[in-house]
Length: 137
Picture 1 (cartoon, rainbow, N blue to C red):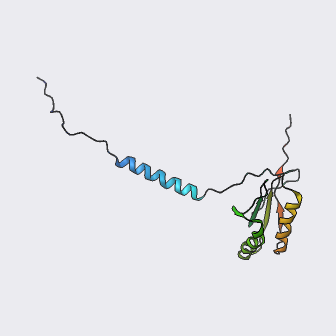
Picture 2 (picture 1 turned 120 degrees about the horizontal axis):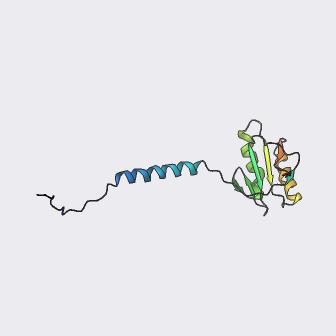
């Protein structure tokens, strides 16, 4: 004759410890990856046939199409450009400035930022461009 176990009156819950461990690991992963994520501003760079691979720059100045200025991924008011450049340049031995200007930025605005950079005593300035894309068939 077959014998069966007594039915259990208490409800059995699934073990939650492994799921909590996985959630904590995912939380740590996303916290660490967001720490190293860089802020980027979409800039449509002008194209040039003589474009070169960029060097490691100390100060990255981004001029967006709307005229907003960002220095080393920090938004800066136009009146604070010189002050910010001087503060960053003090910590660097030989600062290298790279200007990333959108192709829709007016030439006068670009020259004004370049002039402010030179007034800070920095002569090593480069302009970021994109390489001309050619499609050979």
